[in-house]
Amino acid sequence: MKPKSKILIIAGSDSSGGAGIQADIKTVTALGSYAMTAITAVTSQNTIGVKSVVPINPLEIEKQINFTCQDIKPDAIKIGMLHSAKVIFSIIKTLKKVKTKKIILDPVMVAKGGAKLINLKAINILKRHLLKKALLITPNIPEAEILTKINIKNRKDMILAAKKLQNLGAKNVLLKGGHKNSDLIEDLLLTNKELKIFKNKKIKTKNTHGTGCTLSSAIATFLSCGKPLNKSCELGIKYVNQAIKSNLIYGKGHGPINHLNSIKLDKKFL
Image (cartoon, rainbow, N blue to C red; front, side):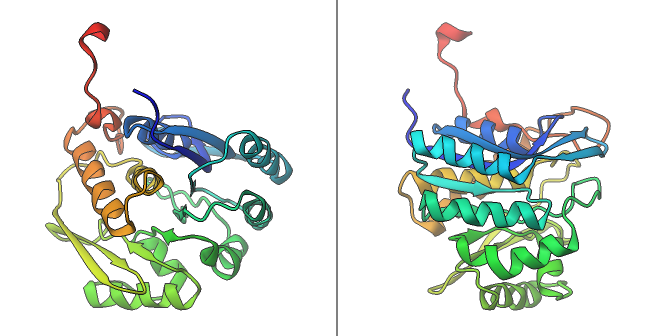
């Protein structure tokens, strides 16, 4: 099997392998595409929490992106953890050179265990300058609340927040509803043409580490292969839900999801 497309991932590393760059590479690979990376930070973490975050120099991040894309042009770009204003400005600078329109921004702000992964100045820069560069942004409810200052309790609040994100410059918004205390998860896609609600039964498990990273990378992969935005979101959500259903019991905290759920190994490898 040959890769169907090429994805550049700009994000932080997760030493436990469940989220960040590691989850992104697994997702892109499992869905049949080729993953390239630019690492923005190195974290020491496990399923219980984050021990430390070591930022990569913005100039080195630029070099990773530029040098890679000069040789292999990406069909789509997924952007994850950006911890500082300087890093965000360096990303904006490099995006002008790469000129890839299919950019998915996952505004990672808080780790599953509660650790803050971005400072207030960086959040403001992201709002003012980076949102408008992306084709799609994929915030969860806590991230959307931080970006919009709206307290989200129901679908009406989600729609209001998504519209405010568009007013801030976002072209399209997939607002993820997994943090709502409900048996039904509603993920809301707002474009300039439609409002679509993806409804799925909530899978009762604590093992959901890396779902946000995985979803944004899955959507980027489907988009890079030529699928329309709404179909890419639908397929990405389906892939994540199947990965959660495996319910891997790894670690003592929020365990990872199963990125291999889409792969069937050839008999010669068994």
